[in-house]
Image (cartoon, rainbow over all chains, first blue to last red; front, side, top):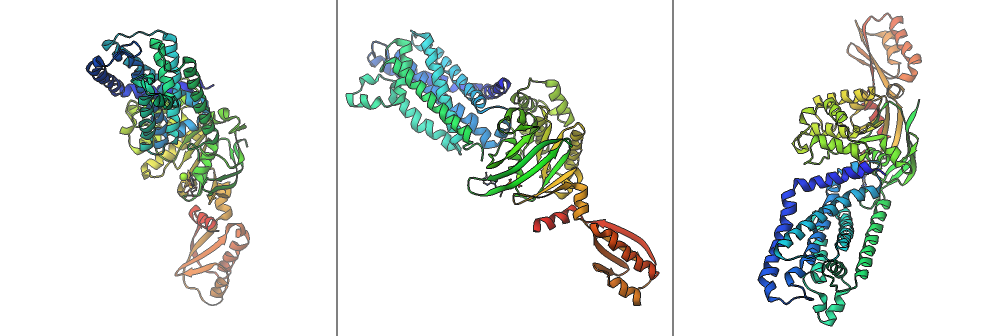
Length: 253
Length: 306
Ligand SMILES: Nc1ncnc2c1ncn2[C@@H]1O[C@H](COP(=O)(O)OP(=O)(O)O)[C@@H](O)[C@H]1O
Ligand SMILES: [Mg+2]
């Protein structure tokens, strides 16, 4: 293993975050505050408790997921897309570092950033509502699994994209709608039976439900299924990445 | 002589079906400067990319210091440094960080002393804390060389190191490349400037349309393929038998007070004395003799035309 190589890539990617520290942290914090002002304070008082939880409190896990998913994908996709775009990728591709190690460096950095930002949002949220985390260990496990999975997914998008627009398309057209419809701000049990069933094909439901369970022990779907689901997606993205490096798809002509 | 790099029967067909390399065989000696000379689109960058792992091979085998470039890619790649043709740098990185990054990427511990030494060697030391985007093109190129040398490679690839570089800078680049050779680094450079190959290389490989047309010592390449010209200035006038005898020598032209005689260097021993015999036999007074070799430019044009 070329550990120093992995660390070099990781540090390089993290340095990008520190350089844009204000922007990296300010924008998720501000948007979280906005959500709380709108949904928590302004509307929340008129919304009933959901599953016995105050609405403002109920949305925290979904809110964290929404931001974390977007962050993972945008950081990881940009992280690999940009060197591909400028040409600096040549150095990584000609270094004595394996595909797995390269992915670990880039994806590890994107996941770390997302975890840092997720924690900041939780901290911000605790100023607005009373947070309780019933299963901190599972909470972290969900967070880590999710960030790695979606950072890898972002990495894939970055390799696949051949223009800046394509980087935006997937998060904008797929991830954000699925997260909103996946029960980030409501319990899908509140939906009419038909839409409830439709929602069950949305992978975000399992993600958000599992994550919320680690906070409040209420879930839309069984926690075991959530864990299996995430692991499955993780395996699929890993296999695709493996195939990409094996064939050189979009990386080596 | 020790071979540090061997390329055997390498073919590259790009996904569109275009064959960029055709049955390339090449072996590079330890410590030499090898110039890969060819016009634009000949396949120079593709060949370097294939060796360094940037381009997938269609078929063939590449061995770097005894290591297969795919199977033993870690050992193979740690021996080589690459300076690509395009200037590509991370705009927001500092000079010193980007060179240290290269060390890390190659699995080495950060060695700031060595980074500083490299930066001094390439006159970049006073810019070490500058962001890359504040550097000129020539400086960026030198940063890229410093990055490629950061892990002390045995073989350095320079893809068109002086393309688009002004004359003064080009000469200092040549000097730096020679210094590297003195330190024992094997250097493989590509160029489409004949002058550069002529000035720098120990051996030259000529590549055209994806094929290696010729590989030889620079000197013997010129000698073997070289046509030479002898120019003799004579006094007085030429007439009668003397004129006839001279005109009967093939490839000889008279031009005022000058005799221009072209001959193949391989047949010099038979041909040249004939000319002088005529001059001496007819007592033609001549004062100046000049001989010229064909330049690589001419050789190259001949080869590529075939
Ligand atoms: N990624 C690619 N896909 C298809 N053709 C390519 C690709 N890269 C280079 N080529 C073609 O291969 C040939 C050799 O290119 P290159 O190796 O860059 O030449 P050189 O470096 O000698 O100028 C050119 O005709 C070029 O158009
Ligand atoms: Mg080229």
